Length: 624
Image (cartoon, rainbow, N blue to C red; front, side):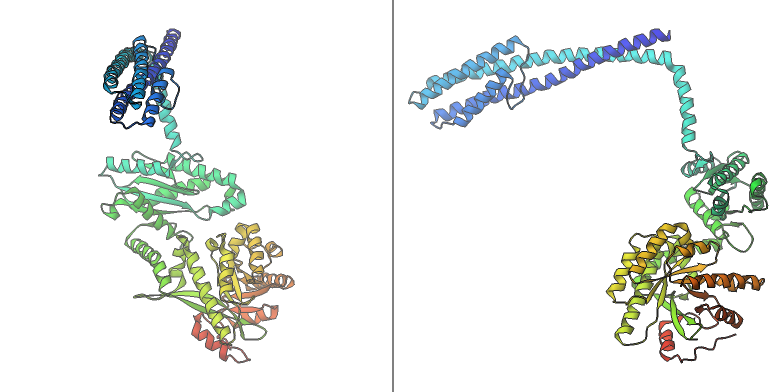
């Protein structure tokens, strides 16, 4: 049966192809016949106009040539008008008569031009008009017959298509149903994350929204899950093992799903779930149970690295009528961010009014940034760096505060993390840099003392391909001498892309910048990078000086770092120093500069000017 059906379908398809090609040709011919009718009509009208001109003794050779050209192309099918020659004897006979009559008319025109009368010309012109009409009618009749043939072909094509469709439907209905089932499977796979099998985020939103619409009386919560410091898992155990952990977690979470619940993967190590619940505590217990099962199954990490899941929970009942899935996800995500990498020990947060206010605060701060830059609301502060040999202020670091109208002066931690999160911190970095350039330029022009000033550069700014050239142009614009501007970048940037960092440092130094590696000792530190990175200054992170125990071990590490830096001719700055014994230790070990509250807090530029203009050779006293 299947072979017979296939054979019939092949015959029908071949028939359809032949009929279709014939129909296409007929359509094209009919279109061409319409053009023939138009041009025969032009001959008819133009010849009458020519005769009228001649009878009025207004000869027009151009019009004669135009009519000659059309008649010639009607006879031969060659010319500029795209005219064809139909295979119709009646039309051909009438067209031949038309050409002959035109020749007669032209002969009479010549006689009129030589002084003859116009009676014969007018008579022959009437005959030409009639012959032209006959020619038009002949091609119209032929075109109508071709149209009738086309209608028959279309009817045959329609019938053939109906038969073909009937055969296909009868024979392949089962196959189509099987194909539909396969397509549904493939469609489901297309909406799933390749690594974990969870829904991708777009599909998650669709399914979760549909579930809530179907069950308006249910209590739902959106949970946004993130792994804390998952980068270290990849670094220590490799990306393949990291992928295994994500697969295990996704499987555990999906196996735990009940009816009317959805699970999806956002990006990297972030996931989302829509859960039903009776009590909010059930949601926390559920996540803790999955996290415990994950730890049990990742045996290679036991006693080596504690996998920590952090999650934000947005209960729909806490947000009124707000049931837009994208908004619920954003709120759950924001709640998660309030506990990620926090020191409180809690790994979850419910979205609530205080978090809502924090969200509003974040949006307000971000939206005000550009206006604040234009209005110079950001204030540059300078924190002195004291040379341990001289006891005097020898350098300073530029810091920033925000004098927000109605709010007072905001500290950096109130706005810089938000700018970094939304990737707009680069504009503030450049603002501070230019303000320092202006300040140095004005002091140099006034013949006042200047010191090297360091400015911070965020990782976002650092990865901007135009970063060095942009800063160099600003420095040159204000004619800042080489060696006065120091660029500070964090060690995390150095270790993310060491080759790029080495290249950028060399580029900066060629433009006369000093280069400083900031926050050395916060977790990424590797002394090995110092041999490849041509920095001028190494800043020892304040974490070294906050330790409440094992001070001797901390000092041993610091001794080694300072010694290596000195051997590499790298200046060292200890930041966060608050006590005299720390200063005494650093001075004894040959640390070059100290930056911290023991000597000076960050201060407005005017106060810093007064300090360096009036400082005495004995240096500051320091405060216990």
